[in-house]
Amino acid sequence: MDSFKQSARSFDAFPKVSSTYTVLSKSGGVMTLVAVVLCLMIVLHGVITYSMGDVEQSFWIDTPYGDLGQSVQMNVDIIVAMPCDNLEILVADATNDRLVAREVLKMEPANFDLDTLPRKRRSGREALGYKRNDAYLKTKPPSDPMHPSCRIYGTLETPKVTGALYINYRVPQGQFFYQPDYSLLNFSHVITELSFGEFFSDALDPLDGSAVIVAADPQSTDPNMHQSHYFISLVPTKYSHFYSDIHTYQYAVRYYHSVSKASVFRQAHVSKDLPGIMLQYNFEGIGISFEHYRIPFYRFVVHTISIMGGILMLLSLISNAMHSRSARQNPGARLLDAGKPSEGH
Image (cartoon, rainbow, N blue to C red):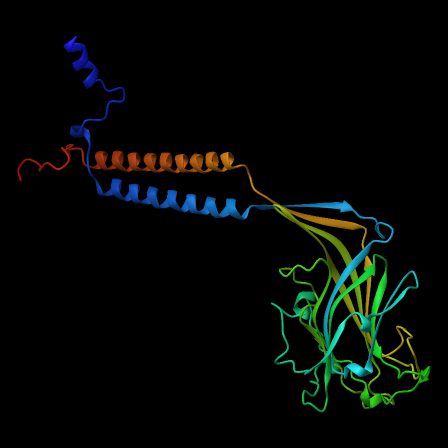
């Protein structure tokens, strides 16, 4: 019985290599250090990648005009180099509905100074992929208090149909036909924000931070009759970030500048022929979805362990190959007990 207990105590199901047959070498230490560093880097990279997740893109067919009565949110922040009292803001759509937007949006005096205006991460002209070098863009408007400007900002609810936002000269109340003093017209402007749908702060739209500076044409009888036309194509976009969804719109834009030939303004009248700013938008029939997702945690663990095991196996093979090469180059070398001095020393 005592011999059985003694055998059980000394039993080793996983016998270790005797220290007599082990060798401490510089190459082995380097390989161990490399293995530890690589494994730590793999684990850190895996944790970061898993926490951030991945993005899957898909497309769907969107009805051009949406459901009956569906509306779209328009987020606007524009500074125009004219006093607020001289500006009329209207929204007109394909159903012939009109909205006096100045009654919905906020308007406040501002200083038109390009050096102090808020900008987003990059200019809209850079986002559009080109630079407009026309003469009317090169002249900087005055920024002193004698030339006040107006900041127009807020949110509009518009039907999901083709429409346009017009910023024109405001005809005084009670005067149906009116011919303004053209020297008062200056539709230089900066678009700090123009987006559609739910506001998404990380989104960068093409017109965010863009500016158009118009200069008087001395050869024209009406030197300030400038028109800025923006043609915007909206693409429905859905961002799914794990547990929350954002329904918004991306857009592409084309810009066109011209000089108006109109000479008479009418009260509460919108027209693409009048001097001012026109933002025309239409909805595309294809939507895009960005869905963030994470792989299951067990797959992440198995994937990480598999890579670490492969690296350890590869480093082990390299270490054995280096040791075999060293043994062939030094056939007289002997394996020494770890920590024991060699004979003759």
